[in-house]
Length: 90
Image 1 (spheres, rainbow, N blue to C red):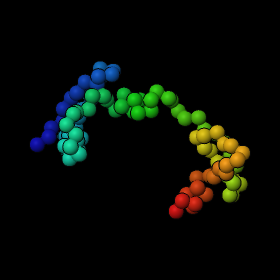
Image 2 (cartoon, rainbow, N blue to C red):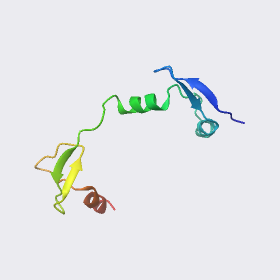
Image 3 (cartoon, helix red, strand yellow):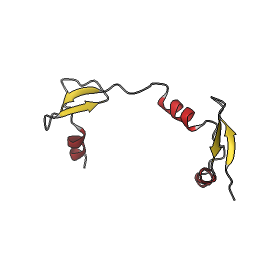
């Protein structure tokens, strides 16, 4: 029923393939519009042109190991490494 189609990205003008599987997925989800951007332009749009996230280093309040977090740690709030954070939210 579906066949691969070549579309043109509205941002960069590159040709990209709208595969039969993607078309089937769009149909199942009820999407009526086909994609207008290639994967790299979609990804760039999703990230908002921010680039990579700035990461901060802190000491885990539970185990004392180093924790890398995407926010600036404050003295009035505990910071947890990913393992300790996951244990608290099980």
